[in-house]
Image (cartoon, rainbow, N blue to C red; front, side, top):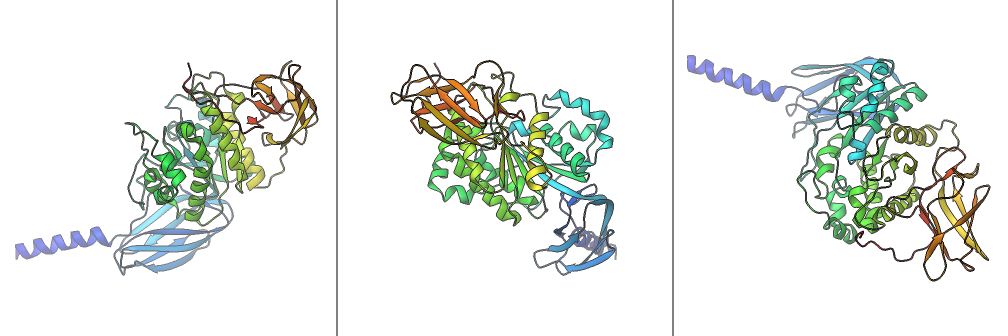
Length: 468
């Protein structure tokens, strides 16, 4: 009899382990759901188990049944921003998610300059700690993990943005979210999914890299390290794929330094990655990114070529680029300390282009076209409607060359939003380069105070040999 009761006890333990509803980590108390959207809720239960979901904002109940693979998923309608609300899941067990807000959700991704936090050295964000209770921001940290195949869960949960949570969160992401919270007056959910040192290939599905000869050859040049993955798809599978069911408004991205030696493929790589993310979320997500900062790399011009590749990504719809050359005070430090203005500039892109708030001069001027008029090269820009200015007496980091391809410091005149570039040493100029080097910092700005993006008018071969 005792033996019979023992096995019956084991049966009930076994049943209880597999009968309970389970939720992925991204669905937890304190989360922010994307407002005014159809959103998925999903999880696991015993095959055939009935699952009931009730939402407090409309007091409606939805029922579904776990399939033969123990999965269940429902679509719910999320109203406009508000909260806090609760969501109740009932089956053989009951789960109640409390303190659920509805607002705007963004993912913050990339490598170390996006990852950099208070604990990693950005101590200036400490000044924010006392005012965090005035903000409505929630944070979700994705642990560093890799996988050969796409995963369906992340072992983490949402947290209210207090000083403890912020110490391990992206400072760029925080200032981005703070600006959105203040200007939109809705709850902001930020998903922190980044890993210092990672090349963009690891954030892109491996099948897309392996099937593209250009991308595959470039990925093969990423040397393995003891600190971060370099295998295509490994971070995507473990740190992006598990959350693609979770509705988001868009993505901000700060990455590129680890792809500096394969800049020829970078534009296509990032466009491929953006396309993969948009397909996974089934939405044309806005994608706002940061151009890498000036830094003294070991090879000539590799930084300039990578920035050029990043500028070309602007031709992809619903993208925007933040230029940060003016925020660097040490070109020997690959992690510039001013993360606040980076986050605010990213937020201004989102506020203007995604949320359609009336803003002007929120984009850095970028090279559009040029014409040669005798001894002058006349350069026109996009996003320079209110004109250009030089900070200081003389222009810096702007050079001009003739057919001999020897570049000389240039004289510059500004007329509205056009640059007239010349040199007394050249009668028939052919090309202009501005801030086209690894660590050069120019002083051309829009009247709104945003730096002009680095550019060149030529397509001549560029020296990338080792710095002597």
